[in-house]
Length: 399
Image 1 (cartoon, rainbow, N blue to C red):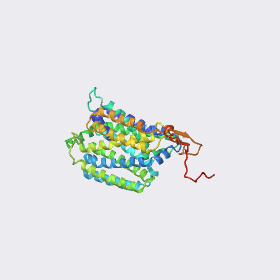
Image 2: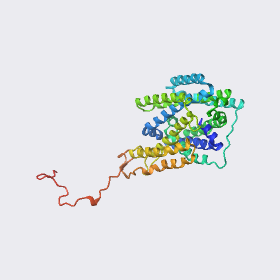
Image 3: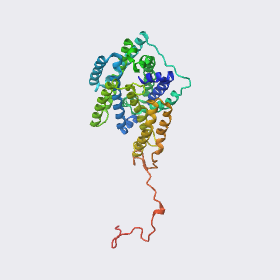
Image 4: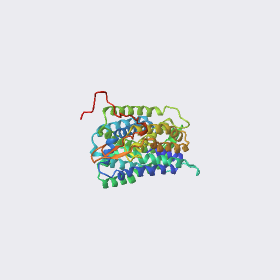
């Protein structure tokens, strides 16, 4: 609910559009794409490490944001109390998933109430002026489409919802959930963007509006608390090993210190230090996670999906080559660099060795009746010999 603030500030209404449309469509489409029974369960089982990493980063991301930006809205003491309340809520709800639906309804209703209060206190939507010739939204749109269409398939909370519903129910729930409920929150983000983006400047204290800041902070804290609870519970209930839980705790601790320290670090090329860290977090959702889905979940040239050493190598190489280009686009504000960066990731799947598959009788092979074809021998490499299968003298073949 904060990325639209940055995009509206930098690109006007088109920044919000290229964020909102792929986000809503990509999330809602999961209810249609994973239509067959058991499909979601198999995907989580086959890619549990990546799904766990997605939740771990998301948890750390929310912890960072709560400690970085919320203090600017309501002050550090109030933010610290809010963070403590969020932690208590997590402890109380970590094993109580049966109340998710009523709590989600209450959270959404609360945010709608904050939306109404915001409007009643004079909050209104404004967009920064943008030159008609600016191509920033055009460079950004493919990256948003790539990230928002693919990231949902690593989200354990999305999978949990999908697995609790039938095919028809899933289409309705994902369609209404993201097309109506979630979309209304994105509209709220468009309205408060002009209130928040001045708080990223060096003179942010002069632009603070306490009443509006408190309203937005309440909305953000409640939404973040519910999101953290859902991801934490999904992560713990998934089949992850204990060291993974320890890694999440360490990441959350690092994110906490990053959030507190971001307000003390110097600015970088005019950007608030916290905004730089925020944008680096977004690289997981715009580059790393969708690259994994593109290479390891979307079927490759052989028509199969799954994690193989070749795909992992292709992903790592593609991300390493594309990362500096994404830095130039999102940190240095040279948006044209996003195009070659995304192209590198898209083409990296062609560096994966292609397997030739042979049909096997049903029930044999690698789970779907297929095996890679054995390598063919080069006839020119076979030595011509009167004894093609020589044996030691005195020995023969036992029959």
